[in-house]
Image (tube, rainbow, N blue to C red; front, top):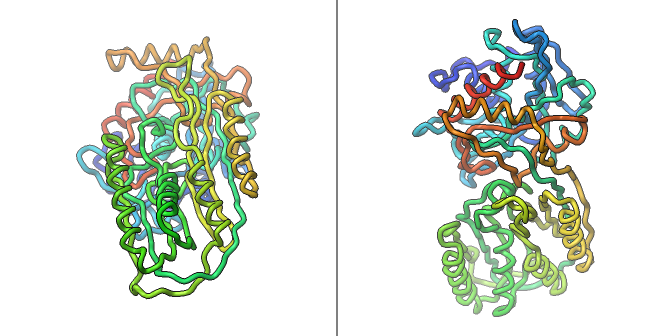
Length: 492
């Protein structure tokens, strides 16, 4: 582990010191989804240096075991769990290679963030909590099984591959939530759909024009899908449809969004336009920008739609989509559903079913889209997937379902929840909220794999996760740590 140790810590003055020391070390190691080998090996080195038993599987998941402290020898084991991968998003102007570069951390007004990129507080704070707990022999606790999974953000892949037979615990505290004061006790299931539409090109003449939609807030496609934030990919369908009704053009490039579980903040389309139509194209985009800012007043009113012609106003000849292929693209985007599809009929304020078209791209011969579907009702999840499949096949395309994971169902009898509720009241002087969440958590997979598992999910306050504006509330992280320690003391 020595090669990962930092020579200087920016967060050394933050409390709890052990938690933020490990958090900073984690942030120095690239650990985006699909790029977790280094951080997985870092965790193994951590365990070996402390002579703690561990298991690292072929996927890179790591579980580290620690014996009970004095007085807890007869206590049942407790599983602490979080994921080691992060969503990698940066501002367009920021130069950062998530495959190689660590994060540039800074503190502002009690909030921790990374300069121009995601922070990875989701779920780096869980990893930091786990390591700080394993590192400190003065903390009283039952036997611990601290599980760090890989590739949660791209379909809970690590949890799906993990062999739970190595775990003895039947009480699991998941540390992958982003709102202090809530005990999460159920979550939605989900899946990802990749749609591919075959496209054909033809030669055309015109002035190259780039249409950019940006300025959107984005956000987590589960936790923030109900906040009436716009999707740049969905808006681009509206822009292209509006242009097509009024003027002819030839589309030759489109791309938007970076992650299927992040609401897309920007989308770019490139097209050929006749020189005489340039003023009308600019005017249509300006009007749409005004209309959309009005429609999203109070929720996402910073929407920008900007059309810009190339360096020359003279027509050039190049390949664009033929009319049929272009119509397919516009029809697909115009009719692809987005956002909340149904609210729960049994839990007030809970989103039951939603959909997010997170990634959109066009290569030489096809349009590729990747969306995330979430639902706490299995049949509704299946129905929405079939709807997307039907739309794709209607246009002559193919679709593939990937990364499906189950819902975590509410457990009426939960001693773990009862204990955590009691400790919260004692620590905070008030009752916690007990809620279900629309975002997917790995608890669903573990609940399905481990008979009789009792789960609760907690976490400190974070803002704008899965975006370049992600922030972690430092004081909340400290309080959540102290609460976690009190819970462990109570779990005899």
